[in-house]
Length: 424
Image (cartoon, rainbow, N blue to C red; front, side, top):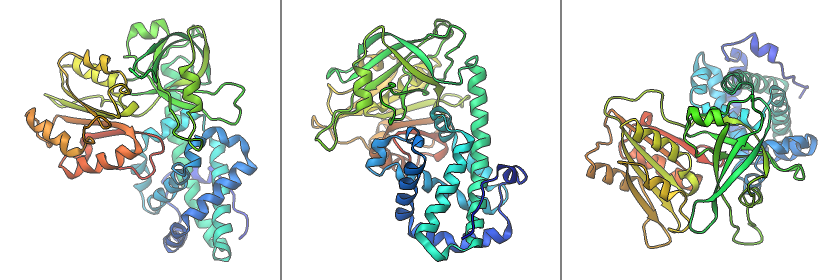
């Protein structure tokens, strides 16, 4: 295989994102064998990436790397996007479903030059695993695919980055925030809300309900990447003027030496007033739509710490006059986060489940049954359903809601952790 090159100039010259007819035929003929060897390709990709470009560690949650959940996410997304480069208009249509990904990339500090690194290591991994089957024509075809997908991502991420900078008056780099107060928001004392103030008086911490801050690790943790934590303040002009917002963090408690306590969450929940952290600007594509149908019904479904983005969103929904129904699931009553705040939402109907206290796991059937009791049909035109929680919860709840008749267009979701192949 001769060396291939990553050329954004070539992609810019081909804004359609469609590869050449010759390359399209090669991709169609080889995608099956690439998928067949995906696990080996992914392993080689990351091993070589981290060995040769160690600075890329900070772009990844290494806990998710260890358990394998994140390893397939990046290369899997690339393979999922490849068919969209074979037909006019398909790639841009796919980009319309990836807004949350663009926000996460910008929040992590992904730059255009990182896409060249992905290009080179992906093609290198494919060649290393498939050997002589990767001819010059095969390498060139897959290079076209990666360049086309990369250009689409870079363009959309630049859009998100510019909008964020404009809204926040120039918050484009990690900034120091002072911890003003720390409040315990679960009975087991594992969940804490940190009230923060942006120290730079020229910045405006503008955000939308459902978004997050990306907190950087302390300087003594150079091998660790940043983490996203939901903003649980409700957005307001007063909050912006005071340069204040809050994040809620759950300390992850390990169950064995192989799964120790979460390093990042343990650090944040141990902070006291007066401490300082660094964070990137608010980001995130999860939230309420800009406009709703008449007589809206907004349903919020959260598992574990997944209730955090739902609190400010539900608060806005009740204030707007929507019919609001909230479902939460936690292991125990003591472990449940933000319950008093949720209880304070006037007019909201709330259903709690505690799975280690005798309650059955929350299912899509439970949601549909409760909606029926409230006089809400699953195909009601004003229905909006928001789902947030760990991947294990989402993999059953999302297809369950769709199977129960809730329209895919009515469902918005955010998974805590790699999304992988999550879909409604």
